[in-house]
Image (cartoon, rainbow, N blue to C red; front, side, top):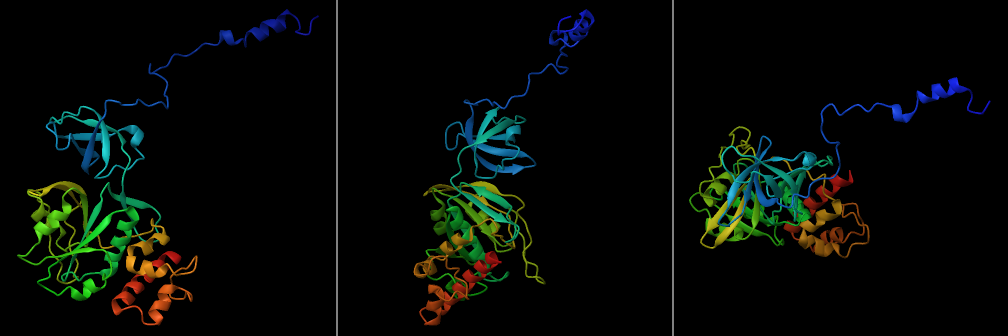
Amino acid sequence: MSWLGDDDDLDDLEEFDESTVRIRPNPKANRPRTKRRPAHEDAEIGRVLGVDRGRYSVLIGEDGPDERTVTAARARELRRTPIVTGDRARVVGDTSGAEGTLGRIVGLTERTSLLRRSADDTDQVERIIVANADRMLIVVAAANPEPRARLVDRYLVAALDAGIRPMLVVTKTDLADPTDFLSHFAGLDLTVFTSARGHMPTDRIGAALVGHSTVFVGHSGVGKSTLVNALVTGAHRATGHVNEVTGRGRHTSSSTVSLRYVSDAGRGWVIDTPGVRSFGLGHVQHQNILAAYTDLAEIAEDCPRGCTHLPEAVDCALNLAAADGRLTDSDRARLDSLQRLLATFEG
């Protein structure tokens, strides 16, 4: 008898022969899934103007003879990719812009900037506000509600961390003199506009918007939507009032939207954002915070390596300058603001 055994054993082995295995047909009759994605070489690139309940408004053919706004949905492969106002999206499908049609966003071009914030300073989860903006206009009121210098500091930090040039406009200067408030920002390379009832500097602000994508940010009730409506014809952004008891503004803008600014001097983009009462910087690297204080950063160049710039840092050039009287009262206030932010991250 051979090592394979007798004939009965051979019959048993044939029951397990692979050639006898039956292959069940694909019940859905579809092709197997693959990670290979189409190149979408025919995709058109457009500017994301806004989003509403999962549908994106995308401007294609900007400033061209075939300019049109397309409604598009997000492709499945982008379900984990945030798409925000200001993004440059690659769109396929029906891009005619006709009523009832729907395109599909299949990709984004490389972003030049990202303005982000977190829920608070301890939250590392970032919320992207806008993409590809190159300027920020911070809107504050001289009164009603009272201006908050430290909130403006946070806007400055977020802007400079994103590579965005900040500007500042103070509204309602007919109600209060903003001189003391503005002294907090003395020494910064910061363009400042002031506005009062009946004297809104739309021409000066508009000139700064030409050729740029400018994101407007500010506390609720400071007059940001009123300013946007004055600058952009047909914007129709909702405006609100300030609660006389709490001194807080009411949220009126609920979404971020891009609006085209047009003037005799040229064109630009205004990106209006909902008003916020806090602006977390948990996503920012603490070593970048000093960059928002360019005047203090020059003094800090003499600090030892690894200096924390906190009040207890003995050899800190900033603390030494404050101790020997080289800092003005305004500089001291700004140093205090800087150290409070740094202390938050150290904690």
